[in-house]
Amino acid sequence: MQDATLEAGQEIIVQKQIFHSSIRAGTRVLLPGRGVVVGGVIRAREMIDIGISGAMANVSTTLIAGESSGIKTRIADIKEAINQIESQRKQLTAIVEKFVKQNKPITAEKKQKFLEARESLHQREHAHYDELAELKIELQQCQSARIRVRFTCYPGTLIKLADREVSPHKQLGNVTFVFKDGEILTG
Image (cartoon, rainbow, N blue to C red; front, side):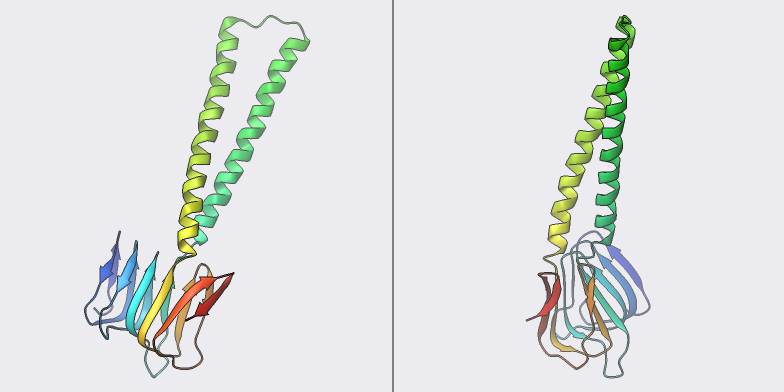
């Protein structure tokens, strides 16, 4: 594969070589044997497992696994939406209390509207909490992602895991990069 763009919902398996391409896999990118990646950007949610990364000439090659910035942004958006719902709930409660304090009779129609508004807020809040729980699971999965280079990882290779990055300064052989305790570690 050369100068290509490829995206898959699950895994991408390339037998021999990927040159200067943009690859994105939902789960894994695999190059069995001495499969080589030179140049370009390779992305996978769970794992990248290749034979050789980069080249002796320090060719810029980027390997990204467990990318979580989009998930973190979505989590922040949902938390803000939950805060807005809480604010709306307080406003609704204040309106009802105002009616009670003024001893104004609440018509059946208004009472129904208040109940519907409260139920709508509750349903939206519940949906947001469900999505938040799913996103937290995804975030946890991102933090367990790994990148394995079985034979040679040349300088010029940029490794990104869980929004952290490292670039080896020397040639490495048979190395696995993992994210642990907020850092990228090799093993």
